Length: 383
Image (cartoon, rainbow, N blue to C red):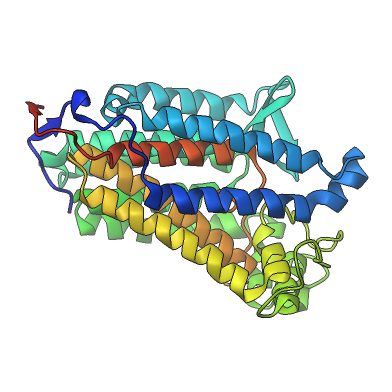
């Protein structure tokens, strides 16, 4: 349960030069490993498609620099100001998600319209929507903490907002992002103190709709079947999982060495995005995968500690939401590449190629550091 503090620290009480090295270290390590592995996984594809094996490397390095700038800016932006920005960010996210379906703005790839194109840049609105949803939930749950157990005040409004986001994202279609949003909302409401009856009932009501959606399209039904036995469908829907498992198997304990992946040579689809962990498993082996999991664990532990020690319930909820989002996305991506979950089009935070994902996640880490900023003096102001 979140602490119900009656006081908060003033902005003047923050330590300006403070950066949480226990959080910064694993984040930067993942970003550096990601840049290296994006190049290793994409060099052959980039050479064939763009005439330069450094194409994705250069872009990912640029994204990383922009991400560091976003982290620094968010680290020095008082997180309490996000209260006033909760609804504007929410509305802006809805506009971006709707704009995908406007001809000339929406950009399709792999059968899904998930990006907006502005000149030479592309933006994935679902990534921004996830952060805005976290800020909204933190603000709303904190504001309604005295009535959080009331169905019409503490539960229904959040589900309505979730439903709007889910419909807009499903239309892309992007089922994986919807799963993250649903899990994120459920867990934040749980932490915020919503009634278990409402939360459990919502899951039971959602299951039939999820099932109907999964079988409503042939490729989704086949993908679900291939999850149970990917080798039986190795030529079509199980192709990605089979080659992902082959990559892990080839890597063994120590790996084949950086740059020596065989599966990335036009066998494993999206080796530098959704299945970058498979390339890491092949080139760096079990040791490399364990290191990646360890680095994510450090981020999650630090995020939980930041939430526990936050000065107010809004900061605690905000830190909780950011930590949950990173944890869910990492677990789903790893589960997919290891054949433990049905295939979803989700990237691995900080590692996979993608500008919007890296920028938003780095900004989120800056917010987390601002929440965890230690006080400089014992001066308090009333909320």
